[in-house]
Picture 1 (cartoon, helix red, strand yellow):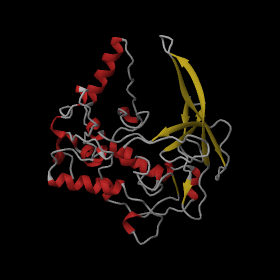
Picture 2 (tube, one colour):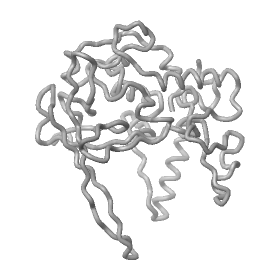
Picture 3 (tube, helix red, strand yellow):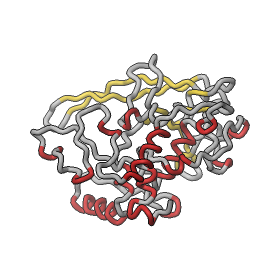
Length: 306
């Protein structure tokens, strides 16, 4: 479907059905009243609030939304299988579906102790490139550890997370305590990780509303950042990507649009090596692993993944 057909939202609508605004409402808080989202809102107090489609969708757009919702909640399986449309998992992966991390389209959780596995969080990795003066993907493991694998293939490594208490105080003297993750990575299956490995714990973010965010003009984002800077308040710094594109999505705004964010998420997390990215971009150890799925799931291009 062409972008023009869908008006200003274009792929933002197709790829992010989170044009939904469903908020838990509290009568005493006027900012969270039913008029906050205008005619698009769906007042909801249930645990399914973030999963609802935007109010007022046409029948055609509802079909697109619920088709995407099905893919979002589908558990992928290793190929070959009897479920030809949904195989291609692995060979290494983090979770078997989008919703396994983004449960009910909400935010994930971190493990409370080293004995708990990562369920809706993951560990990004990199190494420092002194010549380029920047962090780059690990030459063997890429930029994200896959802690699970299909039968007959070893997971990349085991990840354990402990927590360190970091005490502090506000300006008025009120004490607080923060938690700092202490990430331990062991049992690497595809070569040493090295002593200079950089790690970052990432929690699956909520995915509601991303379609609306993609529809915000770039000029508005830049103007807001500049106005905050001039006012001397805490401000964000727009992240420019290759080709001078504005980064919008991901914890560090390192993806320019939802189409790329969705593909990268799938490539890294479950249908790892089927997604149409050049093989040269894969980590070295991946090039020798079986490419389990070679079909292109056309529906994945039209899904409304939040």
